[in-house]
Amino acid sequence: MDVRGLGAALLDLVLPGGCAGCDAPDPGWCPTCAAAIAAPRRVRLAGLPPTLAAGPYAGPLRTALLRYKERGRRDLAGALAGALGSGLTGAAQLVPAPSRAPAARARGGDHVLRLCRAVADARPGVRVAPVLALDGRAADSVGLDAAQRAANLRGRVRVRPVGVPGDGLPVLLVDDVVTTGATLRTCAAVLREAGVRVDGALVLCDASGACGS
Image (cartoon, rainbow, N blue to C red; front, side, top):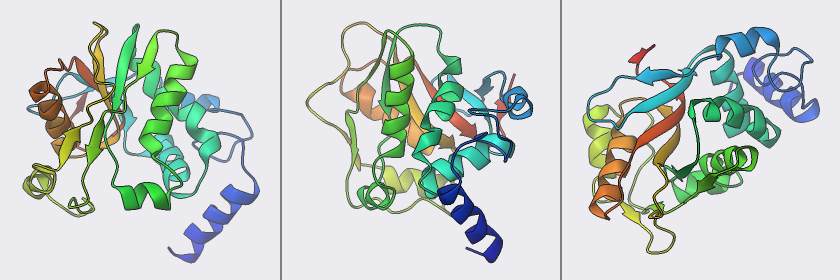
């Protein structure tokens, strides 16, 4: 981290609050940042279940996600959950994409699971089903291309035997960022093999460049 990034991280810790996506004093999202994430958009990558992103991996969403995920700003979970949940139209079961155990420990917990719970807290009829697990052989996916990401996950995502969705509510996968789609494809395939119908997916940020209206 460079000096500027370190300074920003320290300010986030010392002066929490205000807009999630910029330095405005507004709680949640300021009007400018809110306008930038006003409508979810479809992610058009082959092989994915119908997937909605709150916005691109840029601007206020990227800023807020990095503050939340890497700088310990758990107070931003509510604002991010509001953006993530904007693609919901009713009751659903949210299945968070699994995190690597070392990464979750370093961040003080599973950040995607925390987001799912924040969405459920704010929306009646939404439940969280953290049934996917990632074994210790999976490496950090940063810097991997699409084929490498798929290979990294192959055979390493499993369904826990307890809490598998099955009461008729739509099942939606949830992740923070979609890049190549490898994680969502793998998770959807593993759930289907376990007899779970996957109806769609929600992500905060699209980093694939395949977002449409």
